[in-house]
Every structure is written in C-alpha cells, then in structure tokens.
Length: 325
Length: 284
Image (cartoon, rainbow over all chains, first blue to last red):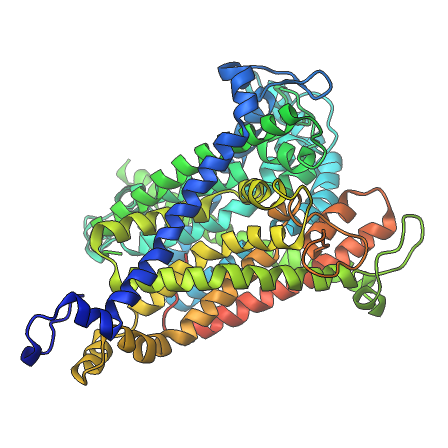
C-alpha cells in the first residue's frame, strides 16, 4: 500500500514524512501490533516460570503419575490428561458427524436464505456463555443421564463385546459421557460454521461434473464436494478439538471432579481445566500452585499447537478454493 | 440387477439428505431449548429484589444480585478500557501499514491468542496482577477480560478497514492529505459502524466468561468499592449458586442465567443484524 509522494516534492526525506505524522503513526501502530507478540510471549513466560517448582520436582514423571495428593505434596497429571482426552474424544465423536451433516445441508441443499438464517441462529448458539451450558448441564442433562440415557445405554451397548466395557458400572449422571455430550453441543456450532464456509468455496463445476456423470445428489456431495473441502473440514475439527480441550466451566459442573482413571464412560472424572478452576484458589502450598500452573502450561501448549494447525489447514483450503483470505 | 442398484442409490440419496436436514434443524432446536428452559426457570425466579438487593446469608431466602450486576459492568468497563484501544490500533496497523511477513506473524499470533483457553488467561492475569500484590481485585479481573478482548477487536478492526474501498484512500491522498490524516479522517469514519459493532461483540463474548474471573476478580457477597477489592460478577455467581446445595440459590442461579443470556444474545442479535445489513457477514 505504498503511495507515491506528490511528484513536485520528489522523494521525501524521512524528516519530512515524520513532520507529516505518517512515520509517527506507523511507529505507534507498529508498537501496539507488536504488543500482541509481547502479550503472547509473556503468557508463555509466566506459565513457564511459575511452574518451575513442579517441573523441577516431578520432571517428566508428572505426566505418568496417577496420584494427586495435596496433603503429601505429590502431584501427577495422568488422571486429568486422561479425562481431558476422553471427554474431548466423546465430544468429537458426536459433534463431527452431526456438524458435518448440518454443514452439508446448509451448503448444498438449503436455499440460500434458509441457509443464512440457520447459520445465523447457529452463530447465536456459539455465543451462549459456557456457564449457561453448565447450568443446564447440572439441572437438565445430568438428571436425564441418570434416569433415562444411562440405563438405556447400559442395557444395550453394555452387553456388546469389546466396547461394552465403556458402558458398564454405576451410573451417577455425572461423568465422562455427560461432559462429552455437553461439550459436543458446545463445539458443534464451530464445526458447522467453518465447514459450511469451506464447502461454499468448492467450485460449482465440481458438483456439475459429478451430477453430469450420473451421480445422485448425495454421491456428488459425499464423493466429490466433501473430499475437495476435506482439509478445511479437518481444520474445523481441530478448532473444535482445541475448544473442547480447553473448555472449563460446563465440564467442571458435570464431570464429577474425581481424579480417577476409569474405563467406564459413566464414571466421574476430572479434566485439566476443571482441576485448575476448582483448586486454584484453595492451593495453599507453593508446590501445589506450581503443579496447577504446570497443568495450565500443558493445556496451553496442546491448544496452541492444535489451533496453529487448524489455522494453517483452513488457510490452505481457502487459498486452494480460489478465495485468498 | 442394475435396476436394483439404482433403487439402492436413490434411496441412500434420500435417506442421507434427509438426515443432513435433521441434523441442521436438530442443532438449531438446541438454541430454542436453552432459551425455553431459561425463560421458564429463570422467569419464575426473577423479581425486583434480584436487581436491587445484596445476596442474603446462607439459610435466609430472598435477596438478589445487585452487586454482581454492577460488578459485571465494572469488569466490562475495565476490559473495554484495556482491550479495545490496543485491539483497535493494532488492527489499524495490520490493515493500513503492515508489511507482508510481519503482518502475517501478528495475524497468526492474534488468532492463536484468541484460541488460548480462558482458564489459562486466568492464570496469566493471576501471575501478573494477583501474585505481586497478594490479593484478588477488580483490576485483575478486568485485565484478564481485557486480554481476551484484544484479539477479537484486532481481527474485527482489520476486517472492516479492509472493506473500505481503496478509492476513498486515493481520493483523500490526491487532495494532499498525509497517510495518517487519510486514515483518521476518511478510512476510520467509513469503517466506524462495523468496528464499533465488532467491539460490542467482543465485549458480549467476554461478558459471559467465568473461568478467567475465578482467581482474579474472585467473588464478593457485598459491594466492592473502588477497584482494588474482590468483586462479584454474574457468571461467577451463576457458577457458585448452581453447584451449591440450596434450592433458593438454584432459583437465583436460573434468574441470573436468564439475565446474562438475554444480554449476551440481544447484543449478538443486534450486532449481527447490523453487520449483515451492511453486507459484511463474515464472522470468525
């Protein structure tokens, strides 16, 4: 965006541009833009420094230890990492098929006005604060899981070999599965709105060619359009995963907050974000606080990497689709 | 045989396409379920006391959340004061001054900062604003929310500045205005509607944040004068009241949830309608 100086002035000196204020404005805005880099590096620095005690004492064993014992100052992250992964996997297992199907409907089938209307409502759904999901989770989803969904799953899937082990054991209503379901509802709007945009960038000719060869509407969508957009869809899934891993309030309110590793999805568990939310203000010892901050560091690194990948994937497809962003 | 195959393909087509429609309407219906539940449960518990009274001690019924409503407003004010100017000016840099590589780095970092879990932002604010002074404060909470406002504002500002036609800039410059005068008097005013809406959206988003406030602003059962004491906020109150074992607190949690959700959704509804009316609907 370099604009040439007025011709009669010739190439202007740095001082002249300084007097115009252009250089000053450039530098000031640059400083503010650079402050974003500063904030991000300070964030990493603070997490690193304040988790020093825990990193020095437990080293890599922190990730394998299954004990979380504030009284004897023995801390391990394994139950929280396990809970975070399990709830996120459950959430994606529900949200990806649901979200992709909805995105296909919005991008391929629905008339433009209907599609825009629904996408608008889905954006609103994404704006609902997470503590509201938690509130509904406690008073609606948990009782529903305890009385209806849980018993039905135990009676049916509980008897299937291999995966049956996931659906056995006492059912309290709170636990991995409940948290996963609430998370699925929370991340599905992101999958839908990003996937819809990516699907809309697929060139029209792709669909026409498939239909012209005699494919049904579904075949054209599933075998041509979706594969064309798959990188961007993967990006949307990564974004959703990063959100699910870092989601705090709703999960804290429905997972049962028990640092155990159990095979059953009905068992109560704990996640990284939930333990930080619950115990941070009660952490009395320095080592205790340091261990919680190290958990924060782990969470930060995982979501940072996932988000980074997701952005690259989405950028790549939007370029490939001829829509430079 | 081929007849059979054709029938199979056609019925698969019909079934799968129907399922996609079911999925779309199913997800949308969740929004109305959430609204319905909150209006039903919250509406019954809402009364005038809710807006004017302090919380009552455990065991006494009644009382309200006047302090939390004021607290949320104070925290948002701080978040706006800290986050909006930084976001705005950085956005101007990206849209008007930035070079290729450096802008890419800033933009990418902004997106990553936007994706940092809010609980981690809480730890960040805790170590910068709570740890040194050894007490929770309104300032620390406002700082945490402000950090979340920055990335959203940056991207909104940049997007709306880019939507301003280049001919406007060229016109101003042809009249002899310097670059910064062009930006300040022509480009920014042209984009101001969009930018302000984007700012409101970012505030609406952090208004519902709970996790970063838990150990920065903490909570308070009384009024919090000044900016240096723990302060109550609606989201944190909803959380503590919902997980408490008292029915009366649950009622209040529903009422607070209704107020919070209506504010957030109305702000979103208004902003998005304004934006889509201007023909710039891309939101990310």
